Length: 144
Image (cartoon, rainbow, N blue to C red):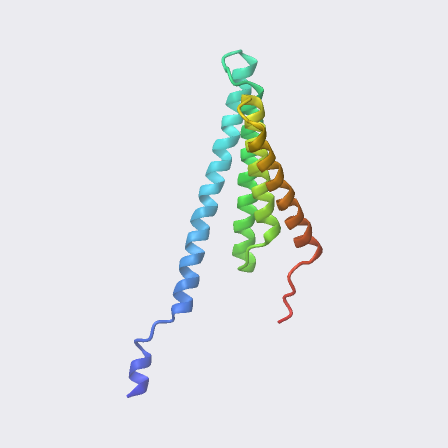
């Protein structure tokens, strides 16, 4: 009688892994499309600057390039998770550092920051830098 019930048992780990694999594949394709759209946007901004039709100018291109770097780091994070089934702290801190740097660059070109906000972002960058340095110096031990 017990063998009969075993047929109807659901392997939850297999279902979970399959769903996670599907989600990561979908996110990877979305990130590829976002990267391509971002590069096309940068090329359009450069063309607009050359022909004098873009008001934002250089600041817009810097912001777009930094956004592309953030997307690349997110792509690396998802690829690494797909291969090793773990998220590395260095990839996450790299992406976060790039996001903060992007916000600083956008704010500097727009001249919209006050000293408290810059102090807060500087503190955040310092903490993220220390976290990244510690993650590189003391990588996790996988010999369980």
